[in-house]
Image (cartoon, rainbow, N blue to C red; front, side, top):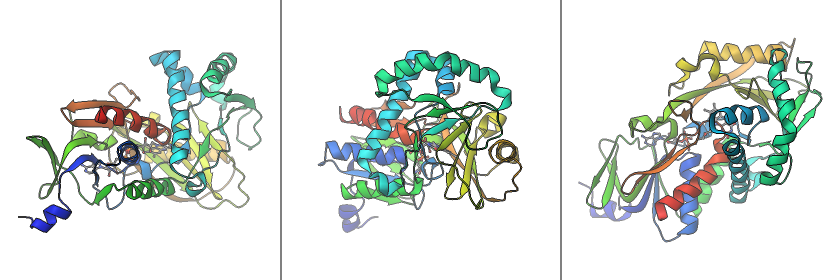
Length: 373
Ligand SMILES: Cc1cc2nc3c(=O)[nH]c(=O)nc-3n(C[C@H](O)[C@H](O)[C@H](O)COP(=O)(O)OP(=O)(O)OC[C@H]3O[C@@H](n4cnc5c(N)ncnc54)[C@H](O)[C@@H]3O)c2cc1C
């Protein structure tokens, strides 16, 4: 049994307990604590540090490419597709009020969409739509984000690039560190290395347990994204692996900005004089629906094809490291997050695919509205 001191000082019930210290958990803790400083909040994380997608990602602070809008329009209609872009854009602005841009190495160098030789029809669709979409987005964002520009980067394509004005990139590790510090400075309690296996309610409290120890709280928020199936299997939140590779140094590399290829399924940027390249889950979708953190030969080969054939044609490059992280999508590839009360005082904020950097500050707002209502 716990001593009276342990119970008094460490294991006491909090007003709110958040499971998962990724961008969702951290932004939600900060959002709630900023609105209600008197509430006690505990964040419980299974890793020794935050260890989900938030610390595995590519650090794009992006809000959407034109080809993504066209694709989303087919699924959810144009209005919703444009609002999705607006939400992400506002999310980045909100994030940058929470952390200082220089503390997270944020650079707004614009993004670019690349069209390879086999994507003539996608390019045509974008050319046909650019004027109309720019006009509509300018009322939502305050500027027209898309503009065709010439390929000055030496990519192996004869087509122009499509610039995404205002897109940026940051250092994902510094972002998580800054959010952690901010949350701690507001009085949020963190418990790392606690892998929650069970969530149960008793009386007015919810209990979360790792099998041997437990914490309790009046309200619990599940913010475990791609790992949520283990805790709340009934929800339509499925793991989806994302893979990356990082080249060794490339002397003289000049790659300023963030880049998207193959309808946004592939993306790359420079990290110093190295190239960080990721994506490609559309190539082997079935096998990528996993929370395994191993990389796969199929996806890594697809990334290398883009690297050697289009990004750095004819260059002999070496790969320094490869890694994978876990995102989440719905059964039919839905990418809007689920924000809801599952049972009285048990909430979920999860199902983030790409663009979590931009989406989590806004998700946290909605989640806080719901939890504090
Ligand atoms: C390879 C890759 C590249 C990406 N690139 C970008 C990008 O460039 N830009 C962008 O905006 N988005 C990108 N994303 C998406 C973005 O990283 C995610 O949308 C975002 O990080 C999701 O944040 P989260 O907090 O919801 O999830 P996570 O960061 O996964 O956090 C969930 C946390 O819950 C913890 N946890 C899980 N289960 C338990 C449990 N049972 N008990 C306790 N703790 C638990 C995990 O350890 C983890 O720390 C990328 C994702 C991947 C995988």
